Image 1: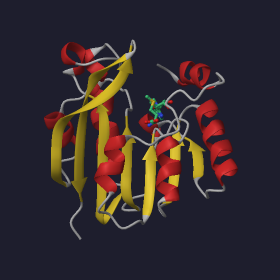
Image 2: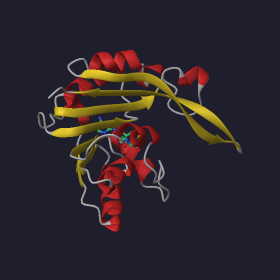
Image 3: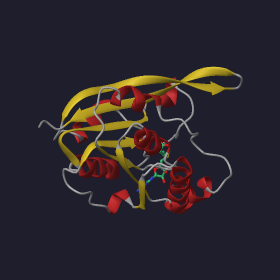
Length: 199
Ligand SMILES: C[S@@+](CC[C@H](N)C(=O)[O-])C[C@H]1O[C@@H](n2cnc3c(N)ncnc32)[C@H](O)[C@@H]1O
């Protein structure tokens, strides 16, 4: 999907991804001391806002102007000092070694582009900092529910770990996330990769 297609989605009245942060973000940053955080492909900012509320000095970037506008408005309403910027991650050079946490959640890019973008974002992780990638796993196609249906935009934990090879990978696995479907619950299958740059 291009930026205008995402704009279209974000111009609706409802929050597309809800207001709650992603559960794996909450789990994975639980032991980290707040510092500077980058939420890359922040969408409407649910994760950036949550990080800011936990004391992280947070920046969010996304190529959807409508998503960023909504994120800014939600930050203002909540009185949270998050900075948001409209940025195309495929053509962006993040500031080197700047962030104690770089989050990429559910960014959907074709494989070759994705490898470059992850590699580039890796460079923004400060010494002692963490990079966290969360996304729809390729196994979600056959074992899970929802998410994009094209295999090329789906993740594999080992492939993501290879993209983050300049860091030390501590977690690279599939995780299941219950989703409400048709009055019941089914699991979506996600990829979670957490890596750090040694001090
Ligand atoms: C599924 S949404 C996830 C949003 C957010 N990370 C979350 O978890 O709520 C994917 C986001 O990636 C953004 N995106 C896709 N391609 C992008 C690109 N090349 N540069 C920046 N953002 C991009 C879209 O605009 C969209 O907001």
